[in-house]
Length: 255
Image (cartoon, rainbow, N blue to C red; front, side):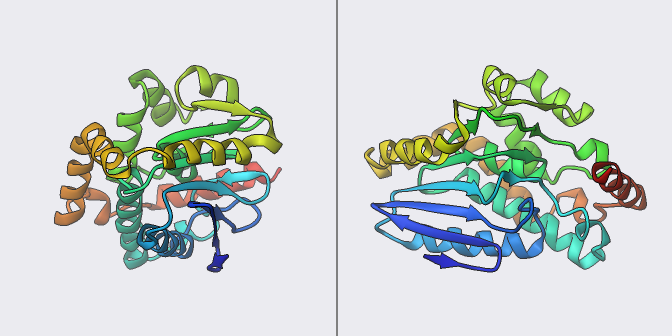
């Protein structure tokens, strides 16, 4: 097993299990993004690995941005955060290997984006929330995250999620095409491994080319924004309004 401070990888029989491991809710900050990219690079460089499963530790896939720390970032850290979110989202969306999301619990905001960027998405049928809540906490979407939402979900679903901050439960997520499969909580990872093995049995080069055919236009748009540094959020991402809204959201969640 390989692990960093917030992410760990276990590889068996050609399948890498990448687990977000930052208790209690696997919230995303610069450290977790750096660790995730480090682990994805190791997986991508391993010639014996043929598919990847991404999941979360505990009872949560990921609750999204760490609202206790990220809104307090200064301008330089905010810029790095937007750059890294754009890069890591685009990288995962176009990843050379098949990717399966084992969504073991809540997947909110940035955590939801990571799940949606995977090739196949398996969720728990236990009660949980899935969706993006950025509009409720006053934090706009970096370019790549919105591009993945637009590409993967039906327009009406994207509208409700992004503008209303609407989250859905497992059954609604399955009906809307957010999820591909539902399993009991204790079977999610097992099912994800089975699907990953099915992907791993496919001709690898052809699979990657087909993924590129399917997602190429979106990936090209993301690559151009990353290359040119033209995401407007690089100039200003989380404003004072966002900091106030984020703090209010945390207080309401703690009640």
